[in-house]
Length: 93
Image (cartoon, rainbow, N blue to C red; front, side):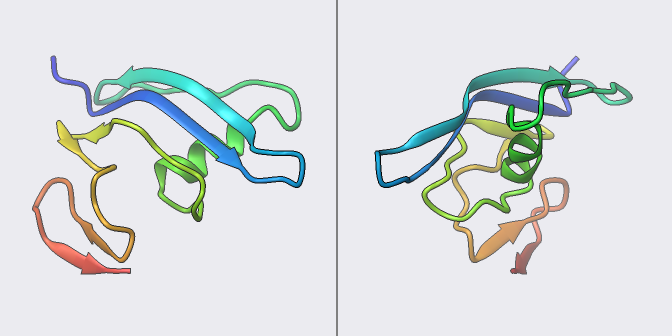
């Protein structure tokens, strides 16, 4: 079965005065329709950062790598324009 959501190599980093801090590093998972995923960890471990990255709500320099929804890549789209993964309709931000 093709996964509903496929995440490969999700990484998010933030700049600091001492250099970049990687909040999430190389996270990969698949979810089939009807699956439930629980992100569990200590405070500050990156749970909210993962959710925000998947929703494309982290401003640059945060980055996503190889995220697919309904077998269509969502990471190669420009931030100002998004497409509905199911219908292909473009919507403005």
